[in-house]
Length: 487
Image (cartoon, rainbow, N blue to C red):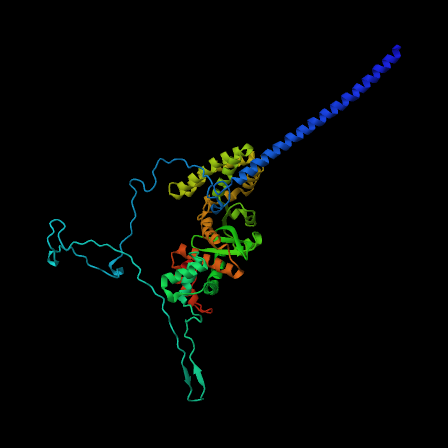
């Protein structure tokens, strides 16, 4: 083979080798791209797994979930030891029941010693020294239901010859259930949250065989009581629109076996509940349709329709959110840890103010550096790779002054605990009854909850209020009211 043929062969082989090298390089580049893509996908999946694991481990201590949603077997985060034993501490002044004054004692039974406790000598009235010690016992005598029979007599008019039958006296119900009996049924089912069957059994156990009724009668009395409470409820709903400060919250409900929502608007002396099929802005506005005061809530987006300059976010929710970020780990942990330190410092200053150790001006002065610390912390995490951390940082930066309203406005609390406590009764009712079977049942629930929570806060008798509402005529201008001044 001559030199030219050899050179041609070598060139051809070089070309084939170069082609193969190009294919190998292209394949390597493809593998590198695929590897980078897999690494990126793996990082995303790891973050997703971390988020889902954190979501599974969420409870009322690290999220906005209510305590009622916690699993019974959920391990609680151990509390830091305080060094104190359980119960009353040494030096704590115990509380005992104050004795009733003499005018409130219904029966007085003299008890005299019969013999000497030392030598056994018989003792008589002449041996009494005048010293005595009173022991009071509160007892409830047997209460038995009474049957009232109204006999309608007929009379013949001597003038025209027509007969007239007597009419039912005012205040006497047209049903076989008396006013107080009806109020007790409503109290047992609406305040004590007994089922209708349990209510039926309880009244018979308390008041005897004459109080025997059917489950259907309990349901009918609930409807009648709901109608009697409607004017007081409507007045309370209109009145709360003018409150200076209202805390609001919502929880799930069931109506006709479908998901609904129970909303609550709470002030120290007046609480109004409303059940709606929706959990949106329209439903919120049906509860507080004309409210223009300070609104205390969590970070639920529905409440954004209220001006943030008249908002107060719940710091207890924020603390739980930061705790959840710490447990999430990864890039979210630093925001969670730093945020918890700031929130706890805020609460320490608030407790000092509430206990009278510092003035409101002093509170504002001490909160100023904490406010700057929080701003710097949130600014560092607005682009956090972890979506939950990024969302919380952006939300809290957007709310701004809504975090600190409690420091400048009298009567505003930094938490939404007052609304959450009000909803706990509703949650217990929902768990025992699975909600309401109809719209009429929902009206009974919201009206009874409104009456019971408002009267409890005002220290008024629920049973007496129910009796007055049931007995009042629809057009009676002196109907009972839930307004605090009535107490």
